[in-house]
Length: 88
Image 1 (cartoon, rainbow, N blue to C red):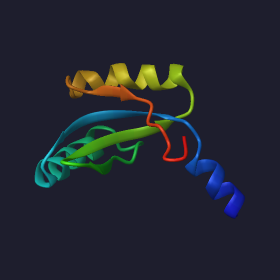
Image 2 (cartoon, rainbow, N blue to C red; image 1 turned 180 degrees about the vertical axis):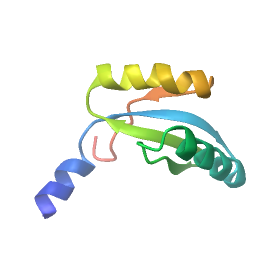
Image 3 (tube, rainbow, N blue to C red; image 1 turned 30 degrees about the vertical axis):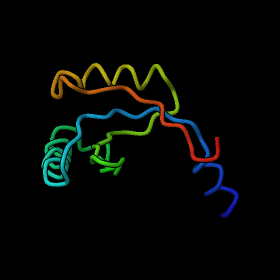
């Protein structure tokens, strides 16, 4: 189990950032995203000094880009990101 957790923690993936701002704004955005895209669990990520809302975790770039186009219709300011892990 520890090896599995470590592998997932260090895996590279794509995610979609739909917005950022204060905690209250991020919480509201997260709720909107939960309604619009229930299949992806939106998460709030704190990156000083703002809170960012991320949707999805994609290992395949093509899949991420397809979903990004769909998400961008609802959230025009969305960005496709490939977060770096802390160990890299």
